[in-house]
Image 1 (cartoon, rainbow, N blue to C red):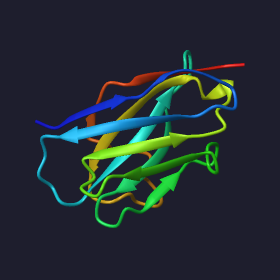
Image 2 (cartoon, helix red, strand yellow):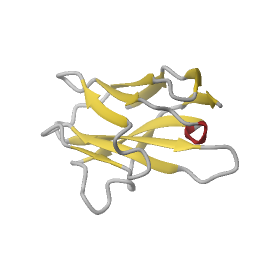
Image 3 (cartoon, rainbow, N blue to C red):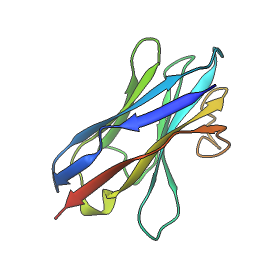
Length: 125
């Protein structure tokens, strides 16, 4: 059974940083992608980033590009979301998800098959 667990959220002041972790287990595929998503209160879920297992390539949403970085350990059992220069509008529940195959340039934000529970990030002004 595929399991994903996001952790590392918390309360931080604007301008601060956090690193989220996504622990993935219970699967045997060689080629997959892990995406980060967020959902703020009263808003729709947004795709934040994607990282592929085959080449480590990443895609990042424009609204966090330059502030957020996605990377993984060598085995890609854990994927990280380094969030710098946080803003109050980054406040959301952050979740990770897994998709078969690589991050696809024109659709990396959709089609995920497995989802984990999220972790709350609160950025105070």
